[in-house]
Amino acid sequence: MRVLHVDTGLQMRGGQWQAFYLSQALLAAGHESVLMTPEGSPLSTAAAKGGLPVAALRFGDLWRASRSFDIVHAHTARAHTLAALAAVRRLVVSRRVAFPVGRGFLSRWKYRRAAHFLAVSNHVRQGLTEAGIPARRVSVVYDGAPLLEPSRLTGPAVAPAIDDPRKGSALAREAALRAGIPLRFSTDLSGDLREAGMFVYITQQEGLGSAALLAMSASVPVVASRVGGLPEAIEHEATGLLADNAPEAIARCMRILTGDRELAAAMGRLGRAAVEQRFTVGRMAAGTLDAYQRLVS
Image 1 (cartoon, rainbow, N blue to C red):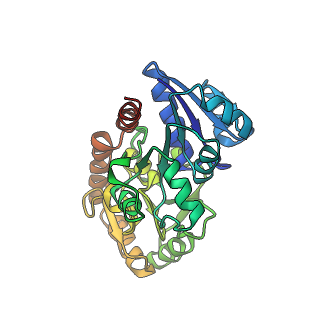
Image 2: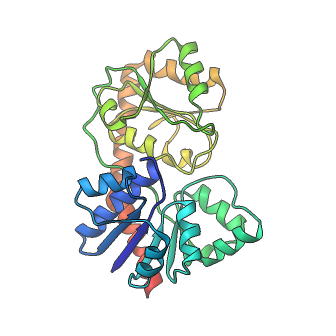
């Protein structure tokens, strides 16, 4: 199968990593997979460094190239728009966000152009069907996380450094102050998770939470907001702790993990087991390929 992935992201966030992992997995399985992304973007750089086929994203090139691929897979909202304008025939769209689908004419047109949607969680799937997308055109494919070396759990709490008002950095900072624990905002999660004592993921809305899955893969217990698809990724009081978006509620969860290191370690082990069972890159790629094959056939 020949698959063209389109991603417009200018940062290397969860969606870009999923596109990278998926392209790797498809190539390893013997399929042709090309990433089309803005020239010089972090995904373009990572793909080139990883030996993945990559092309610069230009509308004319997208229009021409899409005719020779079995599937065009849009990984961002803007990529969805560009592919719809290019009249891509077999367009698959990843839907990773939890906010409502627009109801305007242009939004309805764009969503009709997609042949199939891959929702990152059941929560996101519900949002699509509530917006009028037929259930038969939506599949749930959870993110996949690579398995990291287990953390020694000796370092500070770690949170992702994301400049996005929908992510709760200020709320996480206030909760850490109340709990009396240090909190590091990380731009290198894979590196900082090697020592992290816990992972703090606070957000106003979330499709699933691939960063939380990465922490779980490193056996790091997670404190996260009880919103969106996060309860599908994190089992409360088993693989982590879910909290309301209030400083004291989050601080209480932090104190539990710092006050009982055996509990924290046990949650970390269960989190890693959950990733191994449900959230591997292999499972993500297999679910995606299954959707491709159903569409082609």
